[in-house]
Image 1 (cartoon, protein in one colour):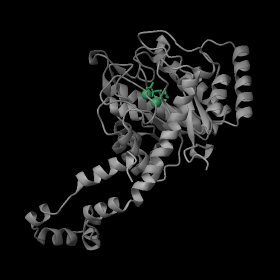
Image 2 (image 1 turned 90 degrees about the vertical axis):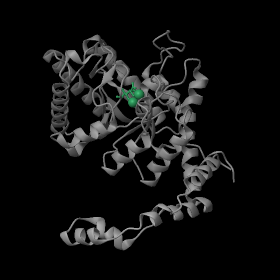
Image 3 (image 1 turned 120 degrees about the vertical axis):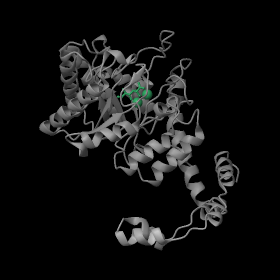
Image 4 (image 1 turned 90 degrees about the horizontal axis):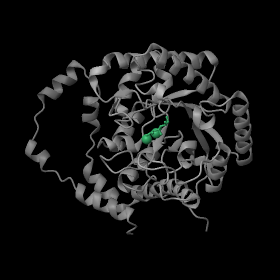
Length: 390
Ligand code: GCO
Ligand code: MN
Ligand code: MN
């Protein structure tokens, strides 16, 4: 029997060049793994098996100080590797955080020349992504924030960010690119505090943009968990708004520094509810594993990391299927939901007469409060399904 948890490109799993290419460097120590060229990273992903595509920041592919000749050679090797492995480029993005020029922000910098450079660099990065067929363009504002609020008016910073996104939407349209923009929130790291700290903050910005239709969000599990928030609820809000354009999957203990663990490694129950949500609502976008193997890993273990991310998603997808057909789960869910066509109709939209009807109703609070809500039983059954109890 074939392994049911073997991924295929149809699963639309993707990895960034910076994820499996991570050298193990952290703020306390140098690399533990060799630097791989982009083409070598593509080969590694092909070896992992079943990966749909690869994503990059402009400078993951072409170093910021590469000459034209160097850039051409890297691009040639990368193209050959993509052809050889049949991997696609799914998403592209801009590195607006590594170079010291962006140390106090890119689109939100106080310095007009830095803001101009950020636009220039992003337009070029969009050209590069389009050259390789990227469909989604991600914006993660790594340095858009502050340690101290004395230095910058956050209202002005937010307005500057909006102006930049409006400019770049128009650029994308003008060039005929197929991009959909996905805004990625993070509460902190590398800045002490980042503007737009949560997915919900970006969802509130989007309707104020000049081209709201082409902009959605790219929520990341680790980022909401760093702030102690429920990721599944953030994704649900994006889905409900039709704005889930991309997703960054990884894992993270709540309230810690940025851990970027293998998907499913730290909080399998949260990951389960997330996968159940994505599958139930038929999310069809790319699922990027934005994480890296731990510092102790060698190449073989990096492969285990990449395979583990995809496998855990597929295992949780199967668990979600079992959960929804489980008789005990079904029975408990029936007890929890008490639908009423008449009442739903009455509450669906305000009319003066519906309001009058509602105002005239009497409610037996004691009877309502007395209804059973067997949530302990449901969560216990969920846990048992996850732990493999029949
Ligand atoms: C992080 C972010 C990044 C972004 C990437 C794409 O915590 O560093 O998640 O990995 O996703 O820069 O824009
Ligand atoms: Mn992250
Ligand atoms: Mn990310």
